[in-house]
Length: 261
Image (cartoon, rainbow, N blue to C red):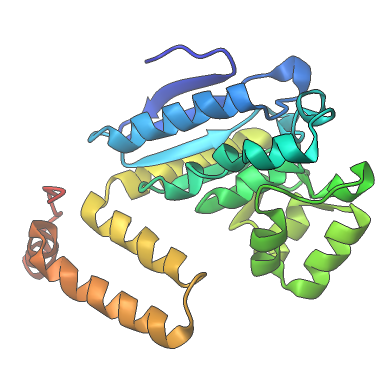
């Protein structure tokens, strides 16, 4: 596996890629160099035919405590606009075709919360700490927080959190639908994410890629257009080898052996 300065990458289970944010002294603060490495690692896993799903995590105390303020505090409006500052932070993760599970423990604040929200599934420990506290720094979320958090929990609750900078717990994240599941411990959270990723990796990659696409389209399209997109995608899978393999295996009461074609 490739070595990086700000992240660790590994293959802990067959078909599962694991990316661990690794700036412990800086509480995994997000920076442009970190995102360059993260984007590279995610794209490598996305292009790897043996990888079926990806887990993104931090450590027990912090997922990512926000953006590196030292990097951005002196940037001017013209510099931010002309360089399209932090656009690269959120351009790659949502476009990875394989499912990404964020395993969140400890703090996921500001950009850390936004990074988690970019994942397809969020698992967290009950004591995890989410929030968009940018308002306390005289600014607003810039990596999708105002959009993805609102889509997840509704306008009123998102407005309260973003305007006050208040945090919410992992337990609340699961209750509100931000997270799919909250675990008692950090270890259980990461293991749960790896187990789910392994289950996904055992499915047809053609089908999982299409499933991810249609669910994400539900966040962009109205119901009528979304249903039409889903139906066309469903019809399209009848042209895949795996649809024939899967249905034949079901009829014959056998375990399917996917071709991923």
